[in-house]
Length: 334
Image (cartoon, rainbow, N blue to C red; front, side):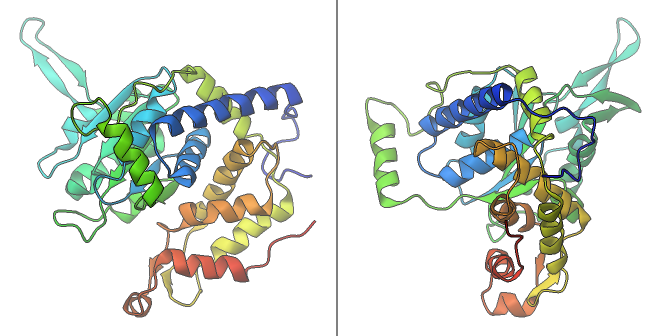
């Protein structure tokens, strides 16, 4: 296969290194699933997003385990983890940090905010006003924070995992479009099945006080530099020209598809390939298939399109429109 995005100087991924990476990813997945009951597709997508070096927006009604999923992922590696509970009175300085004047030294010092971490959980991000939401734009895109005109780089890996309640819930503010586009994927957590809910009931009520699920049983497997190495390996997963062209066709089709008012921009094609590479690794391969592109399409594109008012009146969702598009756009063969 020809890789249209990697340079010819990039060395091939050895079988030994690939197998080692696959083993690490599988163990991380198993540890996360030991704390999160069900939601297997969501777990896989969030883990793949981490390997792709992206940020993830997790949507679902309260009580479905959004925060638990993020904490379980954080527990699998020995990096710094911070959590911000977004509220209507949260200010940008509460997120990024601020300068403090020291009377003794008669100088300013920087008090770093919770954003200085490897994994940042932005809990219920759409409960804060747009000014505070937008304060995350620079750090999500540039991996740096500017305080009083001075830039502070964040150590890799850096990942924002934001949770939000559905917009119809009371007291929510829609995220700015520019910030939505900074999330590599948006995943939706649905209600558990009957068996999963019964399993959750047994786990929470057996010899425990309180009603919370725990991550204490999740093992810490890797260091931050291991995640960075995995991300670098994902960036070298092979993408055939035909597969890359298929990703572009899917994204371009959103721009004039019936029922879609606003289609995805070029960033959507890039995000599709990034996510598909990570999903290829989680599937044990060093090359991307058209099925990887298809599997990445919903989480990558659902927040990058706008449904037309007519489609909303007909009760059509972005996912339903995208599924129809994916069925119609021809995938490469062979």
